[in-house]
Image 1 (cartoon, one colour):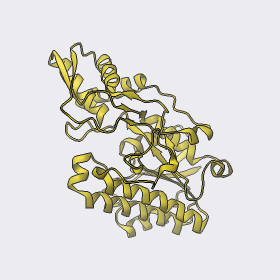
Image 2: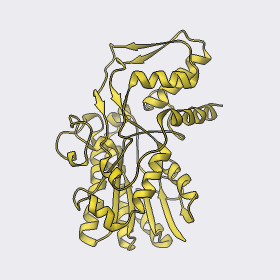
Image 3: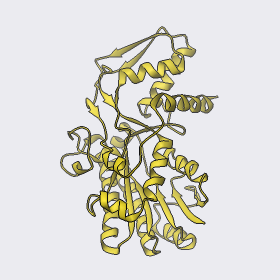
Image 4: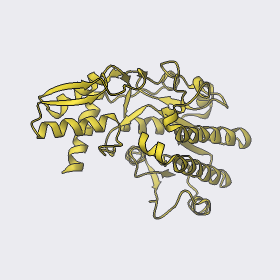
Amino acid sequence: MTKIYIAGHRGMVGSAIVRQLKSKSARLITRTHKELDLTNQQQVNDFITKEKPDQIYLAAAKVGGIHANNTYPANFIYQNLIIQANIIHAAHQNNIQKLLFLGSSCIYPKSVKQPMREESLLTGTLEPTNEPYAVAKIAGIKLCESYNRQYNHDYRSVMPTNLYGPGDNYHPENSHVIPALIKKFHEGKNNNASKVTIWGSGKPKREFLYVDDMAAACVYVMNLDKVIYRQETKPMLSHINVGTNQDLTIKKLAETIAKITNFKGKIEFDTTKPDGPKRKLMDSTRLNSLGWRSNIDLEQGLKQTYKDYCSVIS
């Protein structure tokens, strides 16, 4: 039976990977932060030496919104770098061949051509608001590639688009767009509000991937035959985008969430507020060539997410 360690099993993606793997015949290993401090090299090394997993999913990370990234940039770069380095190096020292690192679409330059291809990594300046976090994630990809090149390991990296789903953060100040809109429309409905106001024009286009689709992609990429994987990747350009190849306007997203939450009022857009980039879409051609596509459509995923939100607040 395959022994699998999921680092970050309590996070949105980590918990979805656990859900995905429970249907497989595998022995899952998890540890809480209290049980294992991933920033402590000795603790990580002792744990990996003792458990000797066959596979590691590196989904642990310090994450946060723009405000948190701007306020605590040192925490974001240090903690993410150290967690990645500790786990990847401990895997190497214990001769663990299979590891999957989870990155983020923020690794790409801020003025990158859309849709974003893997080749655009390191071709321009990063978005300044989360640059330390993005640099740490790029370092994670390069750690995997460097250990593969020097020691012939099989450490792989996946870069998801905007994720949503059960276990998301519904905090009013630092949540992402989908949980923020779900909260807004749900409260609007409950308060019989005549309208809900949304930041910006509603015109920018974004791509969203349901977290259980992301988990399925992770398991798929982890278990791909080495020969097939290497045909589609290069030793120094090995990361794989994970998305749906479809985007929609924030206006359309808001209308869909209003429908799902049963909000009957008007939707207004505050055009005095900034829009951000006009478009953010991942090019997932490489992953599609490897045989994987997402299968949970946005409306279906949003219904599940709303159900999760209602259970969280009840």
